Image 1 (tube, rainbow, N blue to C red):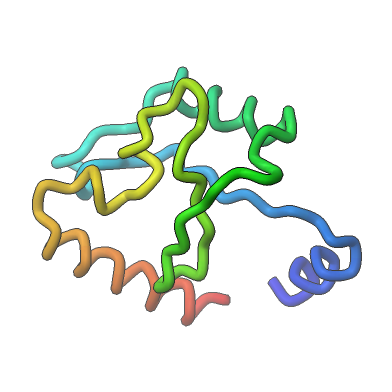
Image 2 (image 1 turned 45 degrees about the horizontal axis):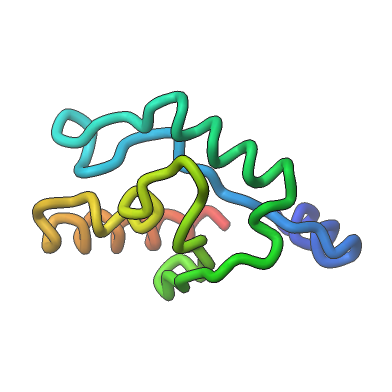
Length: 104
């Protein structure tokens, strides 16, 4: 992870994290992102359409998330928006942040 960060900084690379997993709840409750949604996000990245878009910052993960992408439901871009149980989302998000801190 340290070498990756070093290279990203040295070359000014942009890094995108694309959730192709579950949304709307944990495994068994939520649903998997569909392929057209994932393709729309990847197409926007590759085409450069996300280079200068408005973003929303997710503090816990230190991520800037686009507020809109053509062909993608904007609610899917902010994970908390897709969970009916916001407390459960906060619990899972806290665990995810902890896992990232321990592993990176």
